[in-house]
Amino acid sequence: MNAETEDLNEFNSWDILGAMLMLTLVPGIMNFVFNDKDIVGSAVIAGIGVVISFAVFGLSLLVRGRMISRLVNLLGAVLTTLYIVIAVYFWGWHGNGEEDADAEPPTVQQ
Image 1: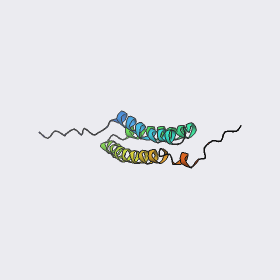
Image 2: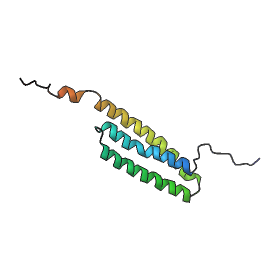
Image 3: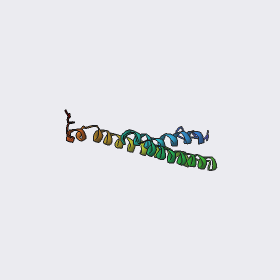
Image 4: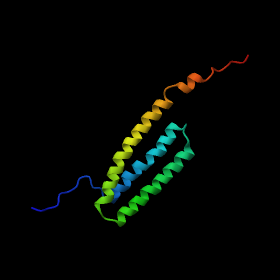
């Protein structure tokens, strides 16, 4: 009767790697989308994200506990909200056409 209840939010090490990769690659993708397809900057940001993801994965292999999976869950909730707010802000800022309205129309030389 005293069986420990299973925490359905608990991740194993491979789940942590996948979740961290998804969370850390989003800034690189957002940089590519909102900064005029900056491939080099996006690759650097994505590379840093991959290094961070594998570091957390290695830590999860060394430390068998629920704490890391709960931290990744909490980080996912916070970062997802932050990413949505940033994406809506940049989408509205870059997509409202103010930059094009201030530009002078092209002149035709004859």
